[in-house]
Length: 113
Image (cartoon, rainbow, N blue to C red; front, side, top):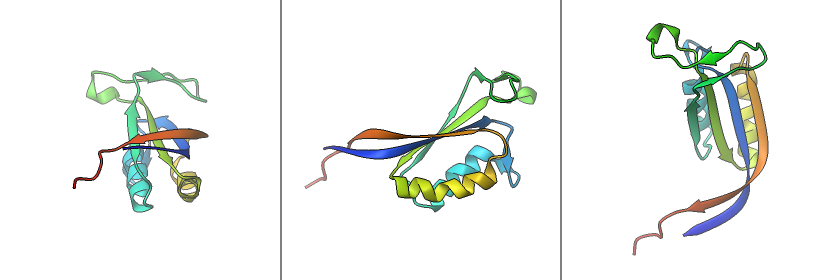
């Protein structure tokens, strides 16, 4: 089954070392998305990147030097995305949030008969 519709995409960029209430920030954001009933969230761990600080963040093979760039991507309708924004205002101390309108094509299996 194929379904097409317009939606909103939200991408949150920050560092792997960022925390919210003692928990990794990406875990806290995904939990908040689930709590608010958003369709889904995906966390990407980058190889290398930098932001406003111009300090390069990179993934490392050594456990003691992990500070890779992280991006959380969420796609849902505008109303649900707007419910998340005030929470992100509290949770994200340093980073970037980008939103855009997107055309979604969703494929799913036809219901079993």
